[in-house]
Length: 312
Image (cartoon, rainbow, N blue to C red; front, side, top):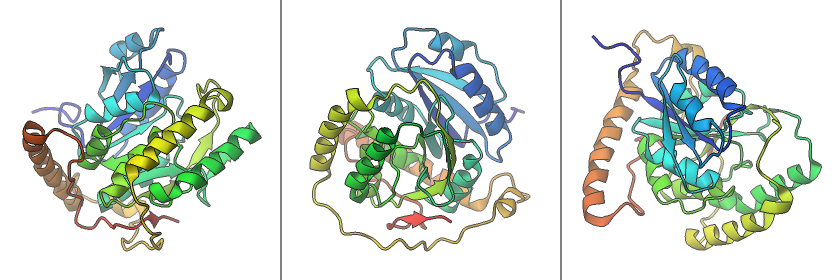
């Protein structure tokens, strides 16, 4: 009989990594320890984004309580790395987070509960009323982030923070959105979420504990102009703006202890999502052979709302 580790993962987390040899070992230790204690089988995919240090070797030699595998992406850019990682997933639920683990992993508990309820997109938000943000040191960077998010809010389901590196998806939806992703740089989050919203998915933001980490590769001076050009292209591809949707949730929140205390290791909602994922994957295979991967329709879980849902 196979072990829990040998069976297919129900959750796969992508970690994009460019020259992360210094921070990655500690980050993987934290992430794998957290995933090993979750009520679902999980795995990690580290995407080496054309690193010039020992990032790939660290991943290949890493031994932990959950599977960790390496995907190589020679096309530079965080967006390109996340795209490659998401397209390499097969699990019913997928997501990505930054290698520095700036977002406290406690947020994974609530993200998994919401995914299992049928929320198609769950993202961490530093601007959520219950979030705790520590060390956001540069005022100009914070002001730029607020302005950036106000510009794109109508494209991404109304959430106030598109750039927090903590995002999770219903698997077939995440893969379809990643297949359409064309932004390689730091604005990729906006395009990825926009592809989900255009497919009728709601976006649920959750509170996080976020700590600023040294070593970020983003520079306001070097990257702001490119981000502006990216946003122009993303908005042009998005087409006509959709009207604002009332921020009303029609899905009840289930307490963490109620969900994690269930006697069955795979709740009914999760089993249904797995069946949906398998059906969509088969449909994707037929679509790929006939028409290619762009703009594939995605069947969302039955109880996925088409309006933005906000927790808290």
